[in-house]
Image (cartoon, rainbow over all chains, first blue to last red; front, top):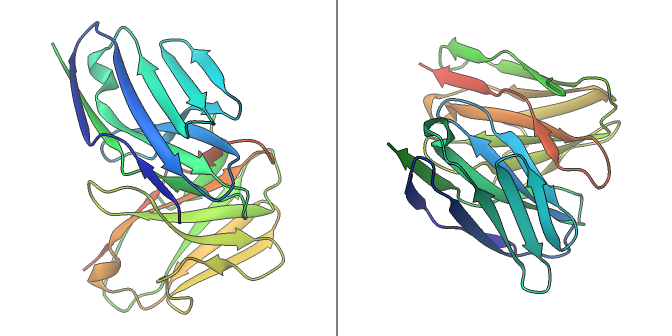
Length: 110
Length: 115
C-alpha cells in the first residue's frame, strides 16, 4: 500500500524556523511535493524534489532522501500569513497519480 | 499565473440535482487530470484519474455512476455529480501535471453544498 506520515500540528513564533517532516511508503516513486492550503482555498504548489538533496525557493526549502523515504519542508523567517495546512504528496509511477499526506496544521504566533 | 482553471467555484443546489464541474488546463495539454475531494479539516482524497479519450480510472470506494467523468479534449475534463445528496457536499478539486516528471497544479476548487 501507500502511506505518508507527517505531524498533525506544529506551532511556532513569528520570525522562527520550522521543519515539517514527511515519511512515505509507496509503490514506485516519482517525486515528493509540498503544498500549502489556507482555510477555504485550494492547495498551492510550494516545492518538488525528484532527486536527493535540498531545493530552495525563497523562504521555503525542501529536502529529500530517497534511501530513507523521507523528506522535509523548511520554512524560514516565519510570518503570520504562513499559518496554513501543509501537505506532503508523493507521485508514484503507477498512473502518475499523486497521493497526499494527512496534512500538518501550522500555527504561527506573534 | 494559474495553469489549471476550475469552474464553478461554488454551487448551492437542491438534493437530487446533477452538478457539472469543469477543469481546464491553460497553455498546456493534459492527457491526464485528477479529481480530488476534501472534507473539512481532512486531506485530499483522490477520487479518479481522468484520461483523455478513454474511460476514467476510479479509486476504490468511489461510485462510477455517481461521479461521471468525461475527458473529451486535451484541455478539458468534467466531473458530474449525479443526483447529488447532502452527503456529497464537499470541496472538489481537479489537478493536472504539466509534464511527465512534474508536480500537480491545482484548480481553485469547487465548493459544493447540497441542501
